[in-house]
Image 1 (cartoon, rainbow, N blue to C red):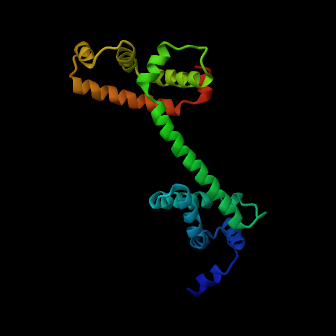
Image 2 (image 1 turned 135 degrees about the vertical axis):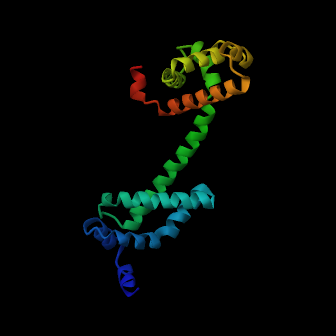
Image 3 (image 1 turned 180 degrees about the vertical axis):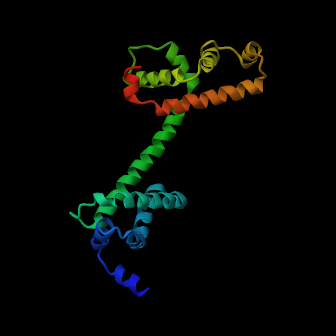
Length: 198
């Protein structure tokens, strides 16, 4: 306990130096204890939710530990940590909002209709979305692509498709749901560099 109290008296910068250069990683616990309430308070002001604030706070300290060697000692550690926390919260919140937006955006039924009656004079954003959809569909198996065409472009009913493939309606709905999830997954993972040459 006495040793811990002695270490606790060290400045932030001295602790960071020891962690980076002497590999005394156990000292990071002291920095965590010193600044957890500050980081948590900042996260809470962003997310207005204790559970989310706690989760993001822990993520921040994990990231800080991994990136500690990027601290250049040109400012106080507390200033660097505050800036890191602020930027992380902004990016995290932006990502949450983007995902919510993208979940609404990724509607295979709506995009499929646009894809096959696309006006190439429309805006670039729409074209970008449709190129991503094209790539996502191209990554499906031939059988899955055919089902997508029949459902979203051939406008066949579930019953009609079930008769063609000798499948029950519930089984076909489950299959289409899995295909839809695949499209969404491929759509999100679509790389812009790949799309430019697709």
